[in-house]
Image (cartoon, rainbow, N blue to C red; front, side, top):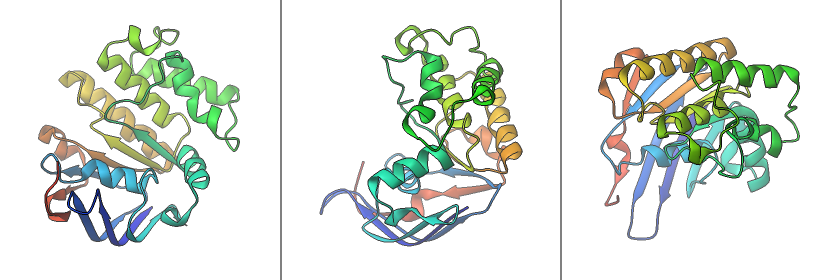
Length: 222
């Protein structure tokens, strides 16, 4: 699903530096990423998703060398192939929760917002406990509810790769377990891989593999 070779990335000449000689994520795998703040965990997710591009090296995702695609092609690829749960949720305030979940369909002509997709969105919202809040805008939702909207948006297109940046960080223990079950169940249905950044070490036994990201950081950064 993901293969990285000889990747380097940096923020400015004297700032944060990241080097990943090699990394792979198999189809259907469940991998947790841990490491200290500033070690580059979120940067790695952004590189895999094509939000950032490496200075050198190669990133293949689902058979495509995403690091060589144009900006527009990367956006289309990300919307159709990758479900991304952002740490800051990245919800649009002018859209309702339902419309935020539909958002990948609004920006990608290759995706069709048909009855099946709408039903899937409703089912995901119900499973996340926000089925009665879909007409509310983000400012009218709690942080935990906003997070669940972001999770539904990431899953609704049935992506082949799910990237999760602290997807359960604002949830109580019971909700964390339920959301992780939802992520894993939906990933299994679609044969999708899950790569999840987390600081919650109690969740690590749920994953097949744990990657300590401190090994990839070079130099100073925040």
